[in-house]
Length: 332
Ligand SMILES: Nc1ncnc2c1ncn2[C@@H]1O[C@H](COP(=O)(O)OP(=O)(O)O)[C@@H](O)[C@H]1O
Ligand SMILES: [Mg+2]
Image (cartoon, rainbow, N blue to C red; front, side, top):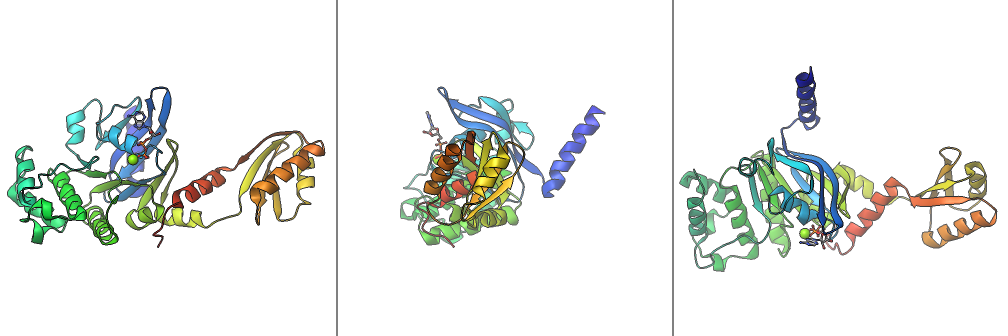
């Protein structure tokens, strides 16, 4: 019975996306000293998708990626790649991982091809045919016999991708791959990564702090803020979620009926009672912070006992989106 139930769970996970799970992150946490920088992260990525970790600087994207590729240890929880536990079966797990986390190592005085040949010698079972294949996949066929010192940053990045693909990994992991690339380079890389996922069936896992970029590159994104995965969503849903809504706050008060009666008299303020002690308030218009302060003062002055007031879950997400679009100059 036990086994049957387990089997069923796995089947359900497959059918949820209609695809094979590739990276399975389960309740993963990471501490630096006493600071928890990745907190209870759980998610799965699938074959054939481009998945993006999206979050502001310091959110924990690189830390998560480093745990996945085995560069740093996992403090709590587990990560598996194609069913192989990264900690317990490191080599078997890594056999399915291709990654560029720090800058790819390249010999600038050698050609792109020479670099790949050199690297292939260190890996088992990489054929000349495979080398030609990966060169084709990253669109470097015409320039592969030129010295790397003549390559643009975008071309070096693509050579790095080719190198990472040599051993037929099931997942390709790239940390902030578009950093430093010009718009043409970004577009080029984006097309290559999409092609790898959608045509070759690879799971491509990238990270970025730019929402517009993830929007164009990914099928799904996981939004990471302060080490917490606050949402995993399709890109379409993310864009919908971004349509700015009026901010919503959840109040915990002693007498929700009475508080609601007072708040309902306020202009541009919609009140929704949840239960005897909770209500949600939506504020339209300008100067939200100031008005929120005024509302709270008014409540207290009229004797309503106010325990807490906090942004709602959807509001937290909204705030995260706003944070993510800061400095984001290439929307669309
Ligand atoms: N080796 C380290 N020692 C201590 N703190 C670290 C270390 N690496 C990262 N951090 C901290 O962990 C948090 C997450 O960092 P990081 O994963 O690099 O974020 P991101 O890649 O999303 O910008 C940051 O606050 C960062 O300062
Ligand atoms: Mg980073």
